[in-house]
Image 1 (cartoon, rainbow, N blue to C red):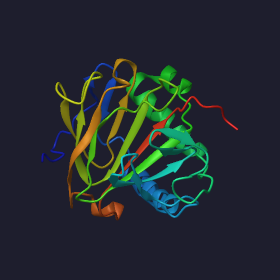
Image 2 (cartoon, rainbow, N blue to C red):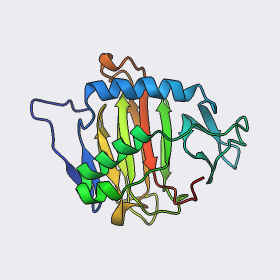
Image 3 (cartoon, helix red, strand yellow):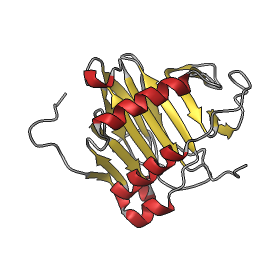
Length: 220
């Protein structure tokens, strides 16, 4: 695993429409996100290991905001957990999402971005995420991915299948990854987490990944 080095990398386009922006989140914002995620994990719908339709259980733990995601749809209430209505999507998180899209595509695109759902995924040292597409949304707006805590290998692939070609990107604490346009429906996953690499200042053991989306569903 490579370190940050004396000369951190600037924004890099991994594929058309897919941008990696290292160290985008300040240390203070990372700590704020950790504190917020701890609150969200308590409920009203608590963090859980999602059960897949075939009976498999995801190694990643997930809590949702705005809309509750279960394979493979969005609902307002968590019928697969406790039946409660999912926590509201906070305005400040939408503003952070707009700033993220601006960093990747420019201010005009950022102003148009209106996320209404977040999936917060927690990875311990053994958790993985298989190659998949984010295609349950009715909107083709970009997905914003924020990383806090342990570094990981983020595998970003093509739009046709789970195999090659793909690019492995190391995502560290504070990194931003945005994918939209031609790469919006690219397969992607996390084959490895580097346990114990989190900055001690964030007071987190493991990796948090906060992903923001526009569902395209009617807002009530």
